[in-house]
Image 1 (cartoon, one colour):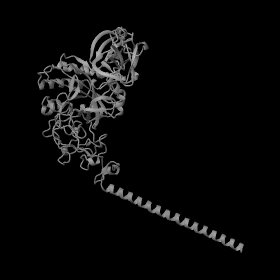
Image 2 (cartoon, rainbow, N blue to C red):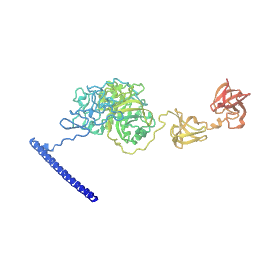
Image 3 (cartoon, one colour):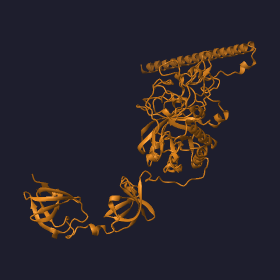
Image 4 (cartoon, rainbow, N blue to C red):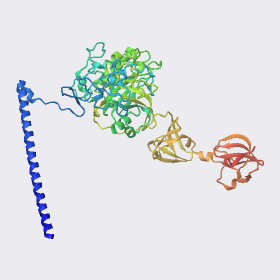
Length: 621
């Protein structure tokens, strides 16, 4: 039985092998047949394509490539690839924009500004960076708010941003918005951005447009600016009023650019002055690769002075990588004490024009700064002149700052909007102006003068009003000497001044600090801890003959007793046990006649004038 069973098992195994072999042969045969059929169809299709091409009598059709549709593109009905952001008619389509135009703010309306906010009449802008100031609601894909849609927001006139010697205002241009239906691009344009400056947008500024007040576009200007892009960036403008800035923290805060005041011409004497923090700010911002522009506060009264200012600025900034524009700022001209008082609008505008033309000759991008109220309808500046030639920086501080208020209500074109003078930025202790710019640059430009500059430190006393003196002082007891007039940072201590050590004091500040010369360095000490009395301790140490020397007493007359018990002494000091006369117990009454600034009280007790610690006494009802 066992042999029979084994034989049956062997027979079944052999049968299975035969069946598997047959199945494998069938599978291979079917595959070969399928491949033959597929090959035949391919050859037939190719022959048909060749016949079609020959029949069309078009020699080039054999070699035409159908554009491949990218993942961010879409095709028209003919199968042609349409770049992202362009619709089938060649117009910008906000639903297909391939770039995020609202970085850091949640899609601020995009560069391709089509149509007004919530309307289809389209007062939006597609063109230059100046018109990109008209942004639509956050989250829209490219809508803009038509001019005047938001109404007039709160405007700051002269003195908008508080730059001390120069009251800052704002900057912009006068241009009416064009119908967005005219702002189109060809379907084969793969970039929405246009390399354009000087408010000379190829679409909006076309001189053939009916009613357009824009000037002609110079192709050389466009070629010079091929590194500029139309996008939204956020920046600050700073001067000495912001104090010593920690630019590393500013960089980390996400600031895209900084406009730095380099100098000003004084409003009365007319002297050109360097901002005391200018070199420090330029060097530090550059060190942390923050793109920088600059501005100058002008009080020029003739074209010679305006050109002098521009050349001074160009020479001053030559060693630094100036990427953003060089701006002209002028305010306070209605003040009778200002040297520009009495100049007409046309005269001042001509001076600004001279300054900015010279800046352009020096190879920098010029920009005009003023407040909305000064520029609107050319109230204080000839914006038909300035607005047609240069970028414009407008200052207007709405009650609800950007992005709650999406754009300035200034009706002219502008490249930058200063929307608040009360901004907060990490690394800057004081309030700072914040701006939105409707352009950026692909890279940081190189300095025109590559000569390395000596590193400078910020003058920590730039904002302190010092009374100039020349006197020898010592410490009343012991005090620290610091590299800055502040006790916040312990690392600023450079030395300790003891009583008897002598230093020269050169200034007494209005902030409670004195400026001193110590071992050839400028240092600072707390004024109240210093004295010109070189025998201060001897003259102010209480003695039996002069128990109140160096102490100021507030005169009073009241009954007191000890909280528990306290010693009554001949001197307001606990250094000498022999000065103890008696002990005052709780319930014993003395008459207090003075409370000293050293923690001691003067009392009359049993016919003697004695002293007790104020904290150990309590008034008696």
